[in-house]
Image (cartoon, rainbow, N blue to C red; front, top):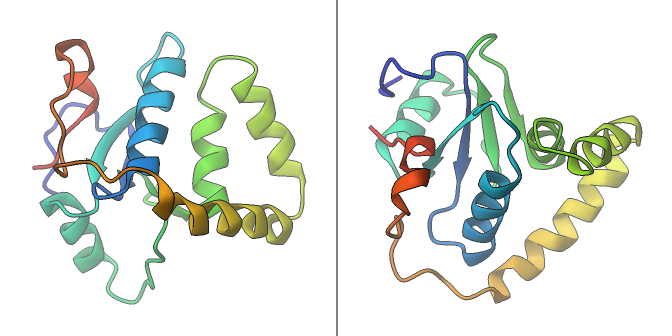
Length: 143
């Protein structure tokens, strides 16, 4: 992967940089992170996501949030990715993620798909990488 050495143990959250709802979710996630910084965010329009797709050519990447666990190389999509993210956030989001994890994934993905359909209604960001406040820049990398 092309991402810098820092954060080798972090999860990389790839999001649609052209989606207003995805930008909202990234801002929400950063605001709810606990003491540790478990994530690096990168757009799906960037070099890092392109490298990920080249690394896994047989994987059918859905139109979804994608999380790469850099420790074990596992890729998560859709609800599985959201649940993984939630479980790293402060309460009550951590507990919500744990609860969702015990439900049948087919049911949770159905809910995810419903939200994904309406996400198109969120205001589209004017640029793929909006100006990020200085204190949040440590969360982003797209090299």
